[in-house]
Length: 319
Image 1 (cartoon, one colour):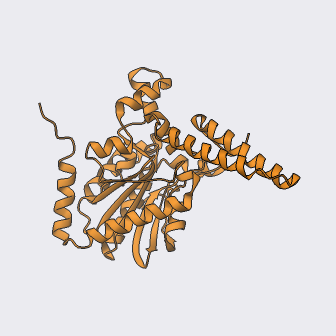
Image 2 (cartoon, helix red, strand yellow):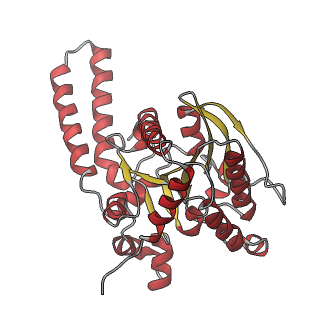
Image 3 (tube, rainbow, N blue to C red):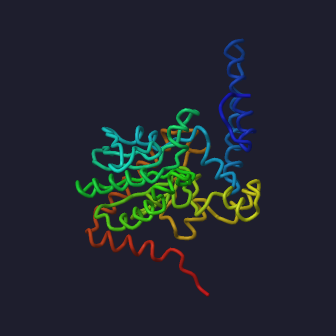
């Protein structure tokens, strides 16, 4: 088996990839012509990929959003933008490493980009607090949003968090207030805001930077009021029932598109963003540029009115 990290439902794909790789190595080393067999296996691999990824359960899509090789916010910033200048600190308490942001250039257009950042290895995960921001993270984000408004720069938000940090210190420093203030003030920002859920979008941790004129999701990301594990722990006192909770929550991009909560879905490479990060970044970049191009045609008054209407209509129901 390959050393590349994989999810359980990816096992048949990984095994076939390994078989093709071994056959190529054997063919080259022994000077034996095996191109026909390799081509046949590659066709089988493509068919297998299509079958698996077109029939994922909601829980499997949640797992895919957490793939250890999936691109994070700083990866997208590096691949999509130039001249990134990170801004640190909230000017009140500290610099939250779980929330990153700063000035950048997107295809010649200056922007402000903000998002949660997870860590790859154990050390980075601890430094980034697993992508779970403290109140100072949300206050830093709001500081950057106001800077963007001051300099009339569009805002790009990349969401990827399992939730806001629920620790005692965070609560003592006003976690709920910081998130609520961000939600209120983002409605008032007089610049275009484009939001992309690139991985996990959990609860107020996501919504604290998630108010936008256009909200998009990557195909295998999720967005919900609570994580499936959290929901299962509350309803059944058993986190192992997360797959059932995922089905009930309907957190996938397809679900939220049908419910009218997001505006569009950004397709991912065949096996997910982790299989081809550069292509994923290209697709996200193009979607952001298209959204900004449409938003810049609106006046400030039109922008703010449309933003309010967008969120007011969410949750409507018929008795």
